[in-house]
Length: 473
Ligand code: AMP
Ligand code: ZN
Image 1 (spheres, rainbow, N blue to C red):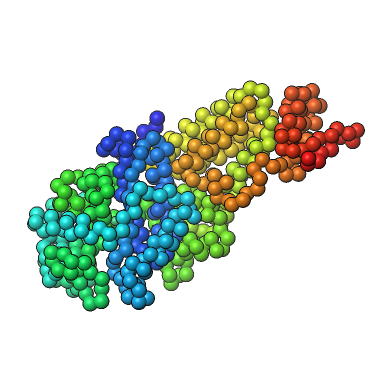
Image 2 (cartoon, rainbow, N blue to C red):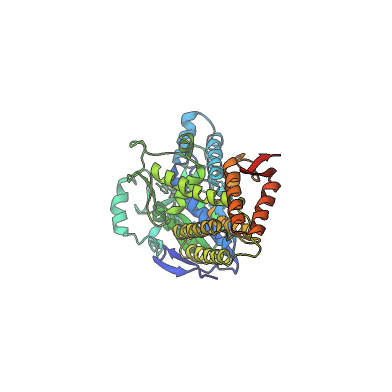
């Protein structure tokens, strides 16, 4: 087995990964703020997390993944007010949209999708502990975390707190905090806003406390992996560490993994540049969802992903090469004994693929191993070196590597993609030519095997003085 290594943002180095509990990985992944449709940048983070969970399962672990749905914050509240509907009604549209996007991209479901509005008591409970322990204080119905009370604040991001001090001053007039760097755990109710009762009066939770409270609820106070986009490192994840460790008194998360951003045509995505796409917009343009997923996988998660339409086209072409190999394989005729060349190709695939994936999720390298394999199998098909049982062994090997990738299962991505066992005319002609060649070199076993294969597909072959003729029975 290959040792798993991840690049831990906490400490900024590659290190061997070992879960706290043998055989089980508990991970928390910051989810969407459901105030709008997700854009393809958000989806990069979610596909990366899907690759992570699928890879861990492939490498032999059970996984418990939690992804929160942020359904109360400034943006959701503003949206609901503007539309004149309840927060719940407003966010439901975008929660449904989010899951539709995940399905379109074959993202596996996490074990838990807790909604912030359904866990307010957990958050209040944690805030109360922080107040009791002297890490938080109340001002006019709001509660703030006191950064000065937390000695190792800044450990994750390596942030310069003096700098934060000056930049935060500008934005701090809203609330009367002791220190501009302190952040809100509980926000006192404002007119027209939804609110919940608390020991500090009516209000709503801050964003950061949501993840600390919900991760503890579903994963306990200490767990293995926490993920998000790089923009989450500061302040969100820094604040989560401060809250959780101050309230729970134990280390919060062992390994922090962060996905770099997606850019479009080399530029930052933004509404004003008109390059901020939702998945739905790309699908309306006719882009294949599996090719989009492939584009996400093909750039390492710690590198910026430059999204271009030509990259999606290239990905679609790469996937078609695999489809074509499988199509040819389906009608290849098996020889009598298993082929050593095929066995070697499968062994090489499994080793290279697994090694790449275990090495900080090098999916691009893993895909490379798949294409080496496709080339080798194509060669075996052309050389008539597909042996007894090889067709199934090759298909099984592809199915295994597709468990983490989730891009190869042609049947699952394409509705009604033909009658699997059927042969088209070109394929029949090719098989007949192969049969003639086998006869010419007096390989009658092979020639008969091809005839059987054609018969099995309902093709009747008649040998005439002008050569073989065929018809569908
Ligand atoms: P939000 O819905 O804004 O809370 O963001 C959801 C996730 O998308 C977070 O993990 C962000 O880090 C991530 N994210 C936002 N913008 C981008 C981007 N351009 N590229 C990659 N990830 C992003
Ligand atoms: Zn979070």
